[in-house]
Amino acid sequence: MSRLRARTWLFAGSIVCAFLLQLMPLPPLLEPLKPYWIGLVLVYWAIETPERVGLGFAFLLGVSADLLVGELLGEQALRLLVIAFIVLRFRARLRFFPVWQQALAVLALLLNDRIVMLMARGFSGEPMPPSSFWLAPLTGMLAWPFVFLLFDDLRARLRAHE
Amino acid sequence: MPLARTDNATTLFAEGAVSTLRLIVYLACAIGLMVLDHRGNYLESLRRTGGVLIEPVYRLAALPANLARATRTAVATQDQLASENRALREQLLFAQARLNRLDALVAQNARLKGLLDAQKNLGLTVQFARLINVDLDPFRHRIVLDVGASQGIDVGQPVIDAQGVMGQIVEVLPNSSIAMLITDATHAIPVVIERTGLRTIAYGSGAIDELQLPTIPISADVKVGDRLLTSGLGGRFPAGFPVGEVRQVGQDKSGMFIAAVAQPAAALDRSSEVLLLRDQPQPYGPPAPQDEVGPPSDLAGPAPAAAPGTPTP
Image (cartoon, rainbow over all chains, first blue to last red; front, side, top):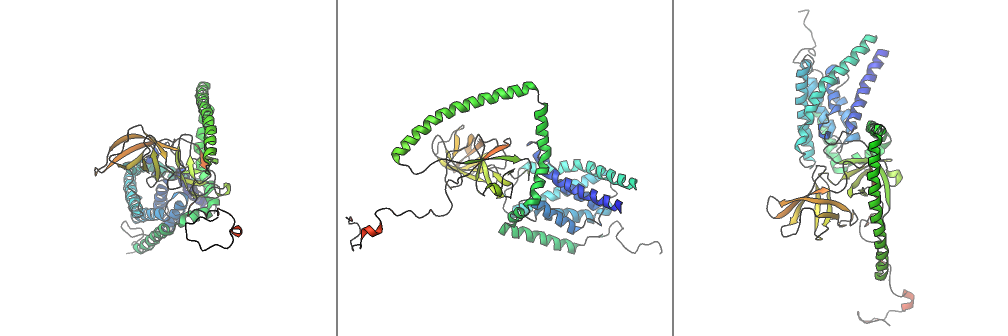
C-alpha cells in the first residue's frame, strides 16, 4: 500500500517538477535552449507505466500546462497528445532501445512536436518564430539520458525499499 | 499452443493500449478547444478564476532565480559593491541635476500654461511593481508582475522602466499580471521620431533587442541614432516616453519604404522593477458630452425664432 503511495508521489512530484522547470527563467542567451520538460516527463512515464499514462492523461496534462504557461487553450494538449500517441504506439520497441537510441527517438519526437506547435501557432495567425526555435529539441535530446537515468534510479530505490 | 499469449498487447508490433479512434476523438477535443479559445479568449478568464492556484506556482517557480540573485549579492565582494555604489551615486547625481533643471522647466511650463489657460494636465500617477521571475515562453515576450486586480491593475496599462517604455498589461490575475513587451512579434506601438517629428509605428520583431519600423516613407529623413518617442496616438501610451533609438536604416524589399531597425530604450531583459502608469492618457470610446456653455437656459427666456447666426442680446 505504502509502495503504491510512494510511486504515486514520485509520479506527481515529477510532473510538478516539470511544470516548475518549464516556468523557471534561464539567462536570456540560453532561453531558446530550454527543453520541453513536460514532454520529456510524459515520454518517460508513457514508456514505463502506460497503465497510468493514456491519451486522456496527456490531454489533461496539456490543458493544465496551457492554463499555466500557454497562450491558446488546447495547444499543449494537442502537442502532448501527439507525443503520447507516438510513444504508446512504439512503446514496446522504445523500451528496449539503449539510451542513446532512445535519445535519438526523443529528438525525432521533439522535432515533430515543434512542427505541430508551428502548425497550431500558424493557424492562430502568429508570425514565424526565429531559427533558434529549432534548437530546443537538441537540448531535449541531450537532457533525455539524465531524465531517464534519474527516474529509473529513483524507482529502483523505491523498489529496493520494499 | 499452450505458450501462445492470447492478448497481443505484449507483442512488438501490437497497437497496444492506444487506438487511433481515441486519438482522433482527443485531437478533435484539443482542436475544438483551440478554436473556441481563439474566438472567445476563455483562457484569460479561466486563468483569472484559477488565479488562486496558478499564482503560487509562479511564485514557486521564481524562487530559485530569486535565490540565485540573493546569493550573488551575498557573495559579492566588498570591492564590487563599492564600485556599484559609486556608479549608482554618480547616476543619482546626474538624475538629480537633470531633475533640478526639470523643476525650472516645470515652473516655466506651469506659468506658460496658466497664460494659455490649458486644461490638460500631464500629471501621471505611477505604481511600482516587481517582476516575478518566470518565463512563460521563450518565443513570446511576456513578463509576469507581482501586482494584480486587487492592487487596481487594469488591462492596457503601460509598463515603463527608468529608460523607456517596456510594454503593456495584457492579462490580470488576482495578485499578479502579465505584460506584453514592445518587442513581442504581435506588438506595435505608435512612435514619433524626436528630431523630425515624423510619425510611424514600431513593430516588435520577436528578438528582445530589436524593433522594426518597416513603413517609413521613402522621402522621409531618418538617420542612425534618431531617438523614438511615443506619439500618444492610439490612446494607449502617453506621449513623450522614449521607446528606442534607430540602429540601422535601409530599404524594404519592395523599395517603396524605408525600413529601419531600432533598439529599445528600456532594459527589457534586465529590469526587475518597473513602473505602471495609472492614468490612461485618453479614455476609450467617445469623449464625454461637454458641459453647456453660455448663460443658463432660464435666463435666455423664450427663444426668438431668430435666423441662425444672429447674435442674441
